[in-house]
Every structure is written in structure tokens, then in C-alpha cells.
Image 1 (spheres, rainbow, N blue to C red):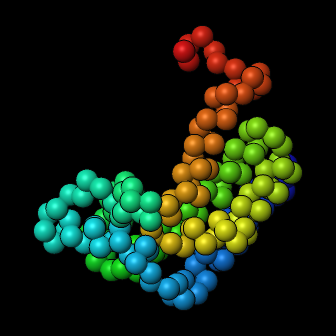
Image 2 (tube, one colour):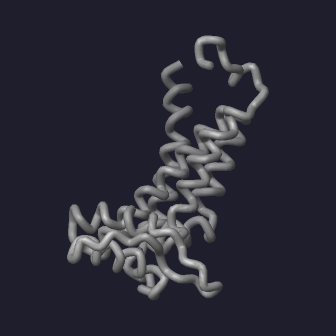
Length: 168
């Protein structure tokens, strides 16, 4: 039985470590584009001048992004004062998506499908790309995983997720 429990957590941990490796490997090769540093610049202005942004970066459609990413970037900037700490922080937050999706897969599907889904998410080039950026959409991987983890079990009609009268 201990071998079974070891196997049950070993694969998700290995998949999460693989996802961490492909996201953090050569992180310093990221090109610092204006889109990536704009929310960080807003966070730096907040620290330097006390200016709380009400709007984020203007898009090519002349609609401003929300300033939420600037507030997220404020956390590592305030703690460490480094632009690279923002990249590390965003990657770390997005790494949470891999075990979250594994957990969701186990609840909604089965162990095998949970492992396959979390592996595909861990090595997906587009997910890796978004996990390594610091612009307004950089928290899509963890945000999507968190929303799905909270929403799908609530919508499930499975008896496993049925609400008991004391939970209403």
C-alpha cells in the first residue's frame, strides 16, 4: 500500500518538476518587450511615486487593459526590487496550474486522465510561453486552472460532488 501511495504522488510531482524546468530553463533569454515590462513599470511608479494605476496598458484596439498585473508585479518588486524577481514570481504562480489541473483531473475524471492532462499542460509550448511573461495576460495559465478547479466540481452532477444539506 505504501508503494501505491508513493506512485500516486510521485508522478504528479515529477510532472510538476518537469513543468518547472521547462519554464525556468533559460528564463534569462526572454526578450524584454514593451508589453512585458509595462505592468512592471506601473508597479515601479507605484513604489516610487505612490501612483495607483486605474488603467493598464492601452491595447492596439485603444481599450486599456486592467491594471491587475501591475498590482501582482508589485509583490516581488516590493520584496526584492528586481525586474527578474517579477519573472520568477509569475513563473512560480503559473507553476501552480500543473498540480491544480492534476487535482481537477482526479476529481472530474480518473488518475490516468489527470496525469495525461497535467503532463500536456506542463509541456505545452503556448502555456510555457504565457507562463514566462509578465504582461497583462501572463496569469492566464494559473487563472484558468484555478477557475476550472473551482467551477467544474461545483457544476458536476456526479454524486461525488453532490452538496449535502449542511453545505448549502
